[in-house]
Length: 369
Image (cartoon, rainbow, N blue to C red; front, side, top):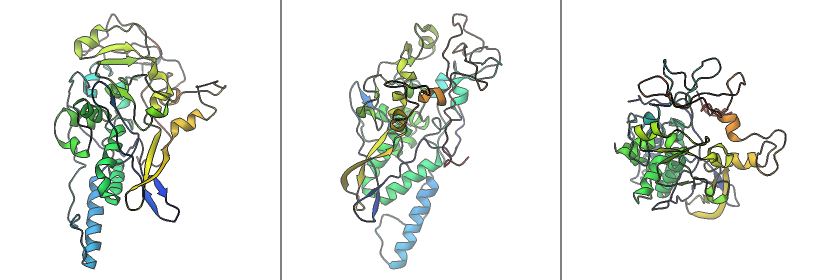
């Protein structure tokens, strides 16, 4: 089992403010929606969750303040809060709908005797190795994200389930979609502590079988924003290459590798990186207004870098920068994309391109390292 660790990363933090014609402001949230049956909706890029420390401190200070006036609500005690930073270790699970990254890492990690997933200077660039240190991998374990959810739910306790549910759509997408597959449409952070498969899926963050199962339907449209991407229970893993060698993945997992060029489109990223929320009033009721809480995809689409419409000379997709197809020296990568689980290369797999380095770095200076 991979040891769980905490990194102060966050794919996004949801603390949107909606003004109501005066100087008052309200934290916002969006009501989560999930489909049932064959099609389910996935993540809503950021929102927030509950940070152990933040939840405890906010609860404690509230209790002290109320106690000093003799007015208490009964909802806070001022005592220590529940420890929610002690998150469980990740388990190796493949249930046919999703698999934790430990499963994928058996073939998509570097190994000394394998030439696969190396650049022109033999540097290790396997997806599993690079992804582990990314914001995506730690989206469900980031204490800053938990703190932001705690702040929002403390402000609007009546909307707690809706806030947690929306945030989980993008920070714990496999758990949310797994719940929708089983007709459980209201995800809460309690799911991550239940010790079952769904909890492991959630704690794995934005992992392999979340992104690589997104269907091309509705991508780039408003219907796909706020985490309304589509994942169907068809057990197909999408990648950019035509005619993939299917044997190893089908033998070692429940999935079939399938060409899906949507993985190269910015609209694929835009499902979570376009978050449109419904604003709440200071009283915690819907204000009737919405706002673009986070809009990196929409901003990119309106910029000189867009690859949609009529691309200009500076056109570059999200993946071109955040999952680069070149080495750190700028050399295009051509390499075998998987290795044998015991070690060594699959003889049937030839070097291929494109191959993206799953570093997913960004310029977010807010995240403490």
